[in-house]
Picture 1 (tube, rainbow, N blue to C red):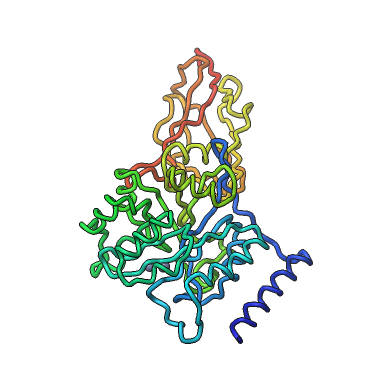
Picture 2 (picture 1 turned 135 degrees about the vertical axis):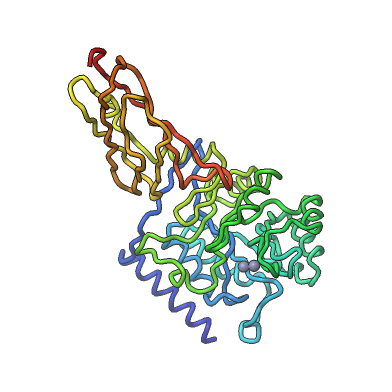
Length: 379
Ligand SMILES: [Zn+2]
Ligand SMILES: [Zn+2]
């Protein structure tokens, strides 16, 4: 009863803030791409209905305040340390959260965490119809039941709970994969990135997922004042609804944002960067006939800072070796003619690598900043 009242009071307090417009949300801007909406999602969240420390509706309000679009509440089937105090079935945390979801417009997806020692470790089943039949204590049976319910199933934090914290693809994982029961892997969980899992997703056609796996209140782990955010799965979906999110997951239309890095396939990362940035076109004409230096304004309309490293510039141009396009800022790229300028008017480009856009564990996204260079042949 006390827990219920606490939850209710926080709900009312939150609603009150919304009504009186005292609630401010700092937008977390990531552009839409390729005619899809970019949805910010966290598909791995705990509440006191397993080993989290938070009532389920608070998880929705936390997501709302962080400018997310969709979440899944994934309480453990097997690990429920507060079950003497919180007596309920496995669907209850979803039911509570989904009421707050309707209030706020956050899409809440029914889910559960299948929790066993390695192998196979922990798996999230999201888009479940009913979480209760999973409570069988047999991991293969649980995963099969989830699959028969049409769930989207992914392997969580793939090095845990391996005794040596290793990412190992075992025979059990192969069997789950061969049965068509593994659809994705967390390449990021909380503060950790899993390079092997990233490569497995690329090699085996699995969906890349990144989640918080949050247990305490979200602000215990992430300082929004400093610009920190939980890791998220970016979903490129037709609409913000369950069907579109599911289509995107099934089609591997995802990327992962973690610790200021964006991880995903080239087509998604390239378009997120392209749609984040605007360059004043007149400024990209570098007039070396009348002046020696050009200032090029680059506006970054997104909440992601991009870190650029120079790979190459035309012979007659000096450009900065490193440049950060700060989130929600205008950066100035200063380009200079060097003394060996012999080149006539031409189009040229500066080749940069974006060091925080990751295509694979070792590859980064390369881009070209186009320039129209005006130079005097005799100079
Ligand atoms: Zn887990
Ligand atoms: Zn978990």
